Length: 294
Image (cartoon, rainbow, N blue to C red; front, side, top):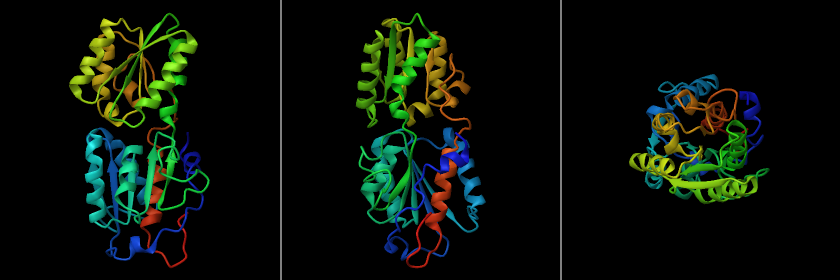
């Protein structure tokens, strides 16, 4: 998916943001960046984020400040981090992925929120509908969480002899139940046995792979999750060590050394950040009454 194509996923003309959100903004607008992931594994994301902000005329430290908050894969930290950004009176909150957006929306009813998620934003309550989001939240969803069955089908093509497939999910992620249900149902339709393993910390990832080895899993589908993305090197190392072919939702897993290529969801890494950066820059820009964010 090319950058310009992705930008078109965002609403062409979002609802006018409440003036109260900008009433007491300092001379230099502040963008809050709330991530469920960690700072180091997403360095390339940050580079693209800053680059596109610069293209929109905003340079960090010169005419815009950015407050970063990272949950380090611990979703329970997101509400407190979102509250910190609200107290900081940021002009806009950029939230990645869906759990961060949900936490941000719960923390404020006035500060504009630009999100990038993997789940259906209507289903999780972020927006009223896709055509007219309403309220103070806008953004885009890549619907990665709904790709489990497609990943399973690709895995079957790549490993046609596989009969027992592992599904790795993070029980702390709000997509866990839906992904499990969708992949299990798809597996049953294909005549495959799905072995669900869970992990929400480093030790549990090791234990999950040990369980897959005991159950003689022929291959693995890794669920969409920020913690898994942060631990992609660990996942790739374990999959290679135990010779378990695996599919993921992002190329960075394969670049970390995974034993099988990921589904090519997008042509260029982190193009999603360009859309968020442009929306964030627009939300932070001073406006006259009646202006709309485009």
